[in-house]
Image (cartoon, rainbow, N blue to C red; front, side, top):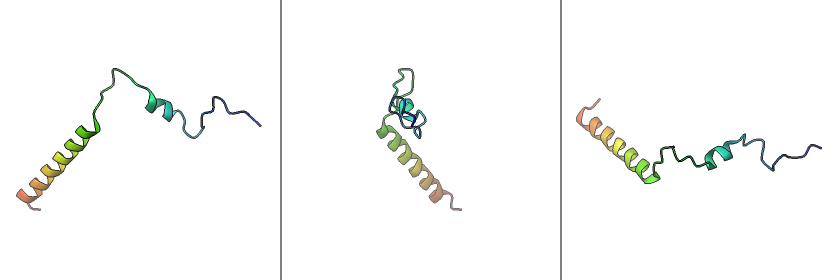
Length: 54
């Protein structure tokens, strides 16, 4: 049998390493900011539906 190299799963295909890496140049957005923006977009869409019915 062939030995596993480095103990990594073949099915992960390097995705674990990608997500665990920290790049200081990357844009960092907090999860709270994402939720607030998503809620604001939802409210705007609902307001537009009320203002301009279909």
